[in-house]
Image (cartoon, rainbow, N blue to C red; front, side, top):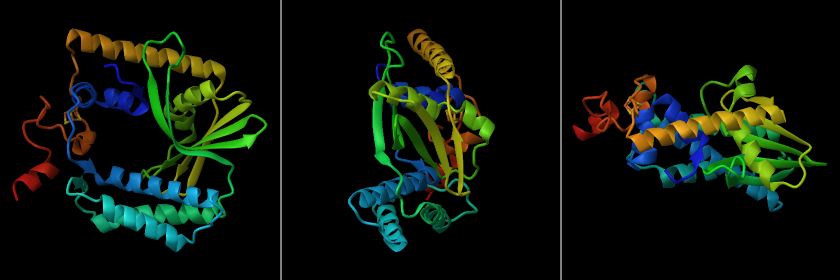
Length: 268
Ligand code: SF4
């Protein structure tokens, strides 16, 4: 349990403590991933490529962007990429990613945002006295000048987040805490989500008081996880529809067989 926590690992713990244990404590890895996360990663890589090109003085055509996406898709695709929603084909998911890129390209061309970093990894302590670290990867960090900054996040999910949920969202607020530790002067920080399937943008800001409250909440959660780990549990399984995207069915006490998408493969 010495590795850094992340928004993603805490979310896994909130959704299903057993899954958290298999992944983050026992370190069990599986050769599978849901196609939705595969699409998301290819779209992120492509947007990074796009901004790298712009940073080097080029403005790639949309065809060039799609070609990059397609090449990444073909290079990275593997047998462990699983389509959970059987009514959809792999081509359907490929198109979702391409359409996300098209929408983004049309909306933001010529990409003259003041980009400071893309795919920027951070590891940090909430405060110096904390005895654990947090980590995250910012999709994009923009420097607007005069101490004004923006953290941007790309989402390929099928539903956009409401403004009310953005105000409570932990992920980018956590990144804000991490980033502010490294920046000399921050007058303002805006958190920006790009919902690429819907072409929507959601923005939010946090007060110092809200960030302090978030730190307290995270510390409490980390304490609970570490106490459970020290005492041997309980890391209870919590069955929800998200089980369909979980590949720990063999280890899970709530399941008696393999995840059906894996079972199909094993029986062929
Ligand atoms: S199958 Fe469901 S209950 Fe079991 S570990 Fe995975 S998410 Fe949790």
